[in-house]
Image (tube, rainbow, N blue to C red; front, side, top):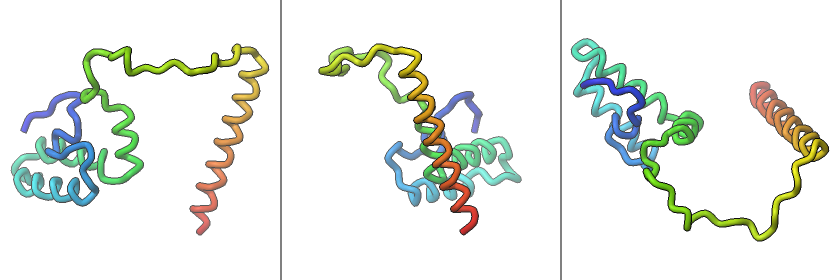
Length: 119
């Protein structure tokens, strides 16, 4: 099993992008039996790395966000819709309000995570 830079973890595990967690786990264990670490350490590392990227919702979402290999090579401009209303002019005041709103969201997320840790 050779390692390819930037290879999709879905391809490594042989699952589709819409695979369930159970499908991913099943594919992982099947491949680990075929490529045990004592016999194929490089193949095992590759399989393990792919599994780590897909095993939980958070890791999978991050992986999907940065996976671009399954995207079409050309952009179909007909699929892009223009908004019915023109966006507002970007001003320092608008940027300031957006930054305050973003900071508020980040603080709320931090509070949510802190309350989860306490429970």
